[in-house]
Length: 322
Image (cartoon, rainbow, N blue to C red; front, side, top):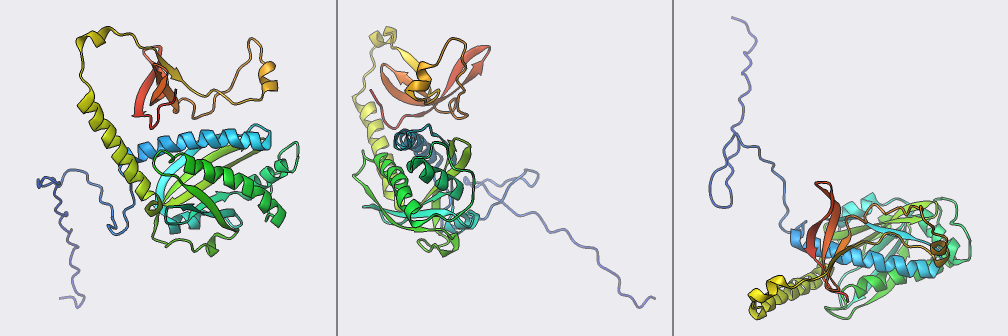
């Protein structure tokens, strides 16, 4: 007999026993993805809440694009890009050093929000405010105190329009509380605090960058609750007061699908002629608006179906504009 101990073959551990919410057991042959969840720090908003918030921020981006174009007296293209929730630690770790980070508060909400502008974009904006005809060459550099002071006009527009999107719920005002260039020095929120992070894609001349806006979920939680309550009241009011009559079936109502094709100066508009091509932004098809009898009622996605131009109805519009 050999003195060497005989190796015992490894024993496969039995599959975990998993049950559905109704108490039925999931078969071991079914493919199941298990993810860790920290219930003390919920990471996700409900799907309906995310859709409503995204629709609200699309309006916010359009308003900011209009006001910044007026301030800079130059064409500035903005599109809503990243829209997600993540921890404050993950958001800050992903920021580059240096970055131009502005911290702001909103009364009467609790918490501090962040607006991050890449140095290349910040330099291009301040150069234009100072009267430069062309955006500055791309460069990563710290801004001077004068440039930061000029940039505060841009930050004021962004925060004012962000507050304006909630004006139907409660009056709010934003206040800039400071600037930072090194993300590691930011201590305005706990590392585990969950943030709503909004990425705005910016095209300004040769400069293409992303502005990031991050606010703690705890900061906007009261506003989300008000939005949900208002939506529920509207739904109950509609169900309670609406009585359908057969005579309504044959009423013709004009329905239009609208999208923002482009923003251009009056001088550029006057130069348009037959055969010219206007390039649509990548998000134009995703941000189509359905106008019913003169009021925006739905957001939709434009495309093709069976050889015809078609729109797929998405969420109801948060506000109806005449």
